[in-house]
Length: 301
Image (cartoon, rainbow, N blue to C red; front, side, top):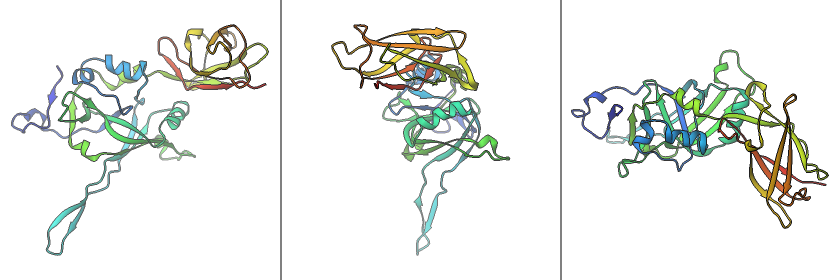
């Protein structure tokens, strides 16, 4: 088992834990409901792969260029009799500057809009800092935070590595009083290898009520065009279809020379969709390597 430190034990028992926490080198962001047992978090990647790759309820950036601790300093008030007391302990907060690119961070901008997530911190010694409720000691999760992505409009000369910003503001400062530290069997690079490659649905055409076709291209980061997807890599997210057969049947024709895909959307009686029908689809490769945001088709005359 990995080295274990229980912060609730006295220093005489946890003498090997008498060290200052290291700098943050990366973060794990999950949906608020994601929890881990200690074994799931520390030993192996099975649960992390499920969260990051399969269910896509978590996110790990490529890395951090740097970060700033923006937590307000404690305010100490002195009473008229000279007694000192805390007036404001401050809520933990930070600005994380991500290693990213304009394509990938564009997705982050759309995902992290002052939304509530849970955040774990991976430190320089590879230890994980997370929240452990002592009433549920085998339930480990990130700290509840508001996460907002932002990027500078015009890149500056001396701060180009601060272009991709993630603002993290704790919503419950008491969770930081129940911090869990442990060194896992994996590193943060193992986690980034699990992350799907974000792709975009590019130049989509309108849906043709004449033949049930629409065309589009699929672009990966750095303008790399994907030309080998198959029909199993297309996922119907939702559909609102009139008629007696309200189920979408689809086929995909790929022109490998141009990378232009022709998607044929019909109902199950092989009829083209009707005006007013709505279908939402996305690219989700069968091996979870590629993943796009969803695109909505509204059929018009």
